[in-house]
Amino acid sequence: LQGDDDGICEACMEGEYKALQGVDDRCIVCPENSNSTSVGALSCDCLDGYYRVENNMVDTRCTIACNVGEYKHLQGDDECIVCPENSNSTGVGTLSCDCLDGYYRVENNMVDTRCT
Image (cartoon, rainbow, N blue to C red):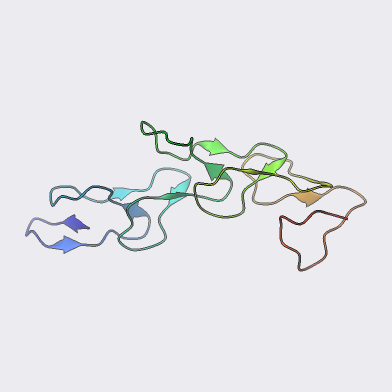
């Protein structure tokens, strides 16, 4: 919640956060590669394909993109995952891994399923 000049508290909007209590503080826009998806958020989550250094109190931005051969398909602070067997990602910050030539993933299988 943030306080306005009249002392009335309002919830931070999506894409903003406020971690500390106090009327004088305003909501902060989420840093690059992160977002808050709820009104009144206390923090921002890393976007798909990015994560932050664990327990990094100095820099809370989501600056680390998944490497080639890794992916991250959900928003949050979890680290990247190595591509499943017989698949690979060709760029950094990818959301999924593509099957290698000669392999496939059954149509409704999740991105974490290996290619056969």
